Every structure is written in structure tokens, then in C-alpha cells.
Length: 306
Image 1 (cartoon, rainbow, N blue to C red):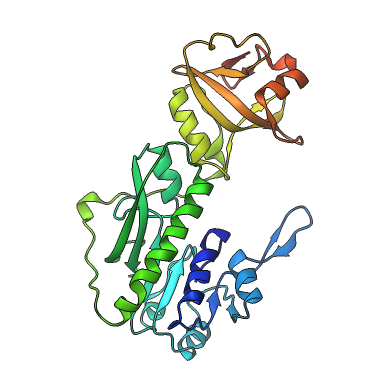
Image 2: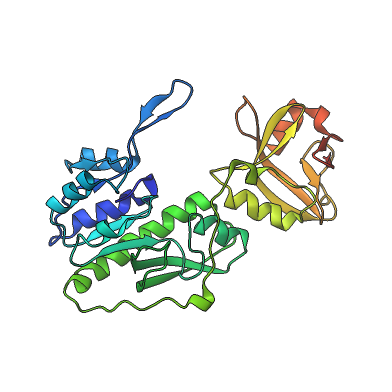
């Protein structure tokens, strides 16, 4: 059970295991996307279909007919990775070895829908991937195995998500057979150490220039690829794709028109790569050449400088 492209490697790793038979891939229904509102299939569906794996796309797992279809497959275990929906108790009870979930954080820290972005936002030095046994709660089930990853402080949420699920594919492969043979025991989570992440909203990406530059840089990385860090300029959305703190002053040698920067609540923020609504992404220098009038403009409540 999975949805985005980041978890396709989990499916691929299962297929590489000689004693594993993947009976089906379960993923949400196709959804209309883009201006034409054409149906777009989940990446897991595309991957499974190309490999000849049967695909199920139930609109809900609570229907008895859907649960009967799952039970008819007689799975020994269900592997879940970024499926995006809670599994009801009746589904959790179908496989004799339970439903194993890969969660991209070191549980019990950062339960919930946005663990990777939250780890970046909070400036964590370490994150990781958790293999856990699902229960009816949100990421509250017992832990089977974990693997840590030391953050470099430059990762975007998109890249880090891909990396963690690749790690998770290996972690699953290393533990799955031992789990089904009853050689592993799952341990309860420490509830006193639990934290819960919130679902990201589009408005989370609107830049608040009164925040410190260091916080805005973390937001830029945490909100990539969605919702992105953005501001408004002359009635259009200006996306900040790459940024870095500059301290209080423009660096020596950076003459006028060479670098776009914004005064924040603490320090200057260099906007290294930006994209104006309806235009392609460009470097700071390219943007200043095309839009020199932005110098001295106010983004929100702050003044831009070059």
C-alpha cells in the first residue's frame, strides 16, 4: 500500500526478494490534475502496472466489499509506505503477520503527516526511518526496527523523503523474513517522547520576513517541493527556491545588482534562486538584470536590497 514516487523503491525492493510474492499494489484512485483536469494515476500504480502487478484503487478501505477483496488475496503481511490513509481495524486484522509501515522519522518523534518537513523545520541533527507494526492510531504502533540518518543541514524535504524511503526499502528487506518467522519482537513506543507533526497547508509557505533568516532558510528547504516558500511582489507570486543567511551585511565584493537579498527579523537573507509567477526559475543575478525595479521594493513588510 503506497502512493507517491518516493515509495516506488520499496515496491522494487520487495520484488527483488526471492521468497516474497507481491500479490497486489493498493493505491488511491486516479485524481484530476492540471488545467485540463485530466486523470493522473499515483506513481505506485504506474510502477506496479509496468511490472505486471495487479493494482487495487479503492476509494475507501471501510467498505466490506473492499475488505473482502483484500482478504481474498490471503496476504501473509501488508507493507504500507506513504499510503496516506489510516487502515481500519478490519483491514489490520487480515494478514496473520500484521501490517508493517515505513515511517520517515525516528518514532515516536514526528508522528503524523509531515515528519520530514517538520524535522527540517525544527533543525533536527538526526532523523531516520522506522519500520513499525500498525495499530488503529496515527503512527502509534510498536517499533520493529529503525535506522538513523545524520542530517547535513542542506537537505530539502523532497530529497530527504526519497533518501529515507530508499533506506527504508533496505531496512524492510533486512527484517521482513525474520518478522514473518516470529524471530523479531516489536517494542512499544515511549509515549513521553512522542511529538506529532501537522499537515502542511498552502498558506504555510507564505514568507514572514519578521522571522530570522535562519528560520526562513529551513522553511525554504522544508517546503520544497510543496508548498514552497513564496512571497508577493507587484501582484504576482515570487517563489524562493534557494536561499541562505548572509548575516547583517551584504558580503564584501558583492556590488550593486549582483545579489538579491531581503532584510528579515534577524539578519539578511540571500535569495539565490527565485521564480516569478508565469516565468522560469532563475538565479538572483538573472532576476536582478530582468527586474531591477525590485531593488528597494517591499515584500510583505520588509525591504529588498541588492
